[in-house]
Structure formats: structure tokens, C-alpha cells
Length: 305
Image: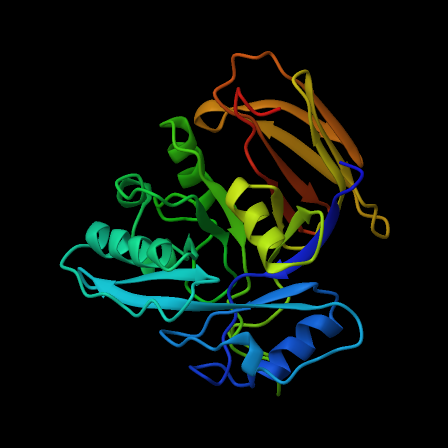
């Protein structure tokens, strides 16, 4: 683990190429200035080659091409981010939500990209039932701060975290992404605008390259966060250990969660260790801060070393 580095990035970003209010260059500058290491530009059904973005900072910063495939089916929005495809995947019109999701995933994979299923609870569009019937994908948004994304559920509807546990408990191997889905990068920040910097992923990789970042996303070597930073996340055959970076006077709670969302253990402080029994179908760590921040580590499976 010592040769690996943490790199913070955003997988879901809009610019004025579609319905954002700032240029791709401005977006790159904003995220770089606010401590991000990499950024995926994902305009609605638009593909911006990163070599066309005139941003060349003195310190390392990586731009990755992408696109939000924005579709609809059964009267609901069905969106996926395509990360690092060779070209524009284009939207696909299909009769059902499941067929539409599958078409977007297939098109992204065909072009060498990584599909991310976006904001399922947005407008209560689709559920784990639909996602479980789509193949060849492994990433979805557990947190998106944009209006009507309904991350926490309510009114009898499941939260995105509950949907994740249902998928994991059914035997699926899926990883959770937080992304800010930013549309507003300049001007007044107020109201229900889609603002930057509210959710991200931090990947663990040997270098800041497109290949290394994408490899970490594919294998789940990252955590998702709205505030919390990790010093380390270590998995051995015997235990899972989380080390949290202390910020101001915040207090931290870590829950290790398993089958059907059951809390296996709870720990307080900046370090939490879970002793693996070996028979758990999966174990994942969920962290809260006293300031209201959240972080989600990816699930550990029986064959995870």
C-alpha cells in the first residue's frame, strides 16, 4: 500500500457545452483550485475531448473525457455517466427502463468506457430491481446532492444506501460513487442549484494517469465522501482497518455493515478495525462525522485480500 497515493476527483460534471454555466476550462480551474486531482467532464449527450480544453496548470491535474448519456423510458429519466469512452456514446431510445439502462451500459463498454448508473432516486426513476437486471456494470451514485435526487429516501421509498445493501445481499458486486453533478460553477451559489464540491471519490492509485484512475474505479479501490478524508483503508485476510484524517474537533463513528444492511460492529474515533470471521458475504465501512459528513468504503468480499 505504501507505493499508492490518494487522488480526489469528480465523475459527474456539467459545463456550458450542455446545461452548465461555465466553460470546461473554468470547471477545470475551479476543481483544481479546490484541491481536486482529477475531473471527468460529463455533459448531457455531448463529448468534449480533453485535449481541446486549454488548461495547462503548473501542478499536476488530470482531465478525463466523458459524457452523461441522458435518456428516458417509462416516463422516467434514465442517465448514466460514460467515463473515458473513445467517442460520444450517444443516447439510446428503448421502451423500458431496464432495456435503456442496458443499452447505455453496452454502448459505454463497447467504446472502452466505464459506465456509472446515475442518481436512481432522482424523480424516483428506478430501483435496485431494475439495476439488478442489467449486466456488465459495477458503479452507481450513492450520493448526488442535486435537487430531487432523494439520496436518503423517505415516504416509504428506500435510500440509496438501502438499495446498495439489497444489491450486495443478492450477490451483486457493485461499488458506490459520490458525485456533485455540478451545473453552477460561477455566479451566486444559492437555493437549489447543482453546486460543486459537495460529493466526490478518492481513488488509490500508483500514479495520476487516466489508466490508473480508471483501473481503480473498475476494481473499487476508492471511497466516496461528502466531507470525510481517510488516511488509509487497509484490508487483510484477518481484518479491515479504517484510519480517518482528523478535522477540527469533529467526532467520528464508523459502522461495519454486512448482509441485509445489518450493523456488525460500531467504532468511535479516527481508527476503526473489524476482525473478519471469513463467512460474511460482504462487509463495508460507513463513516459519519459530528459535522454531518459521510464516507462510504467499498465492500469487502470473501475473496478480497
